[in-house]
Amino acid sequence: MNTHADLFIRLLRNPVKFRTFLFYKLPAAFFSGIRINGVDTTRCSVNVTYQWMTQNPFRSTYFASLAMAAEMSTGALAMMHVYKRDPPISMLITNMQASYFKKAISKTWFVCDEGQQISLAIKQAILTGESNSITVRSIGKNKDGEIIAEFAFTWSFKMKQV
Image (cartoon, rainbow, N blue to C red; front, side, top):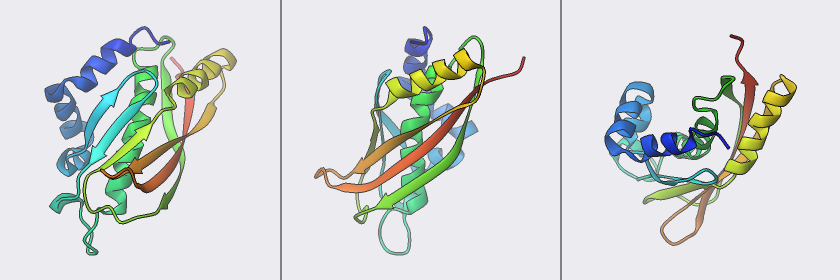
């Protein structure tokens, strides 16, 4: 495990620092009101609310807003496992697939519970010195537990050339 994971989790859980990060680095997520509900080394839960900034003309949450929240649930885990890593690791999404099942007309929670697999993929990239990819899933549900959408993101990890 990355010894800096706990520090990164504290940063994510600090509402002021997290919102400041979103404002400067991911302004679309900031203005969409995306929030991290819970995070540890293996799991991350993120929500997006149906509101004016996330709506589409069909009175539901715009698919891109759903994708943004889903990606954050996987990306926060990936960032946690590369945070202050020595040697430094670069990360990049190389593919995304999505399936939508139900209109998102209220808050949608996305959960990715594949932090352990992400950590192993990063370790493999370090061991081999080559780029290593992993596809992880994020499932979005409404308050009633109904599946709204499923996303699969392929993350590529590679040691940075220093």
